[in-house]
Length: 212
View 1 (tube, rainbow, N blue to C red):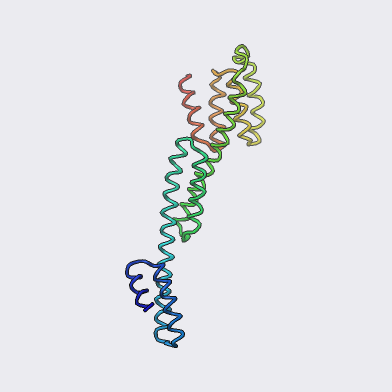
View 2 (cartoon, helix red, strand yellow):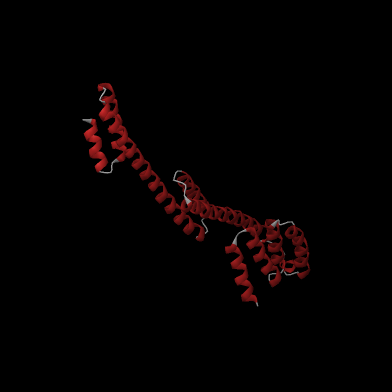
């Protein structure tokens, strides 16, 4: 009958089927008023439901961990949109998992990756626009140290306000006028770091060492 099939599915770790057939068995025993088997079936149904829930939670956790791992690789490859998509999906899976310290730590880490990817995407788009803006700049003006200093004066205002994105834009502009301005390049790296994009900061600081 239904009960025997449920037992078989449970022994084979086919928990969804076991739950389904324990429920069918429970209906049949209730109609028969077989109270002994009603109680037994209820206990076994609870076991099967718990096992099924644990299996689903485990599958969600495995899927989330895999998406975070792939997201990290996408971030390091500058594929920010794909990274953001992966991490958002991972957070959905984590949300369906049991909440314990390990899961909470995983969620916190995934959120940090997501924040970094979003900031990196914004910076990438901003820098692309700036490159287009300065592409046709007058070569004679490009190397004006005075213009470079003027841009640095403006950036101090943004820095004091913790408006690091606009600080980045101004430091970048200063470097377009005078690329050898190592102080501006170092400060650009610091602005990247303050904004929360350490990879961009490292690139600028490495460039500083080449110019020294």
